[in-house]
Image 1: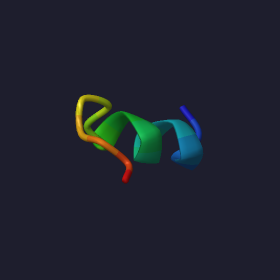
Image 2: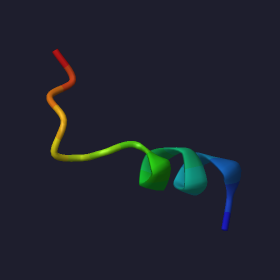
Image 3: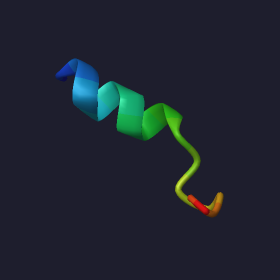
Image 4: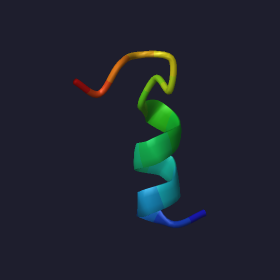
Length: 18
């Protein structure tokens, strides 16, 4: 797994980016 994939996985997709 790349660091980018891990960083994205750790980030809650449910949380709004705004």
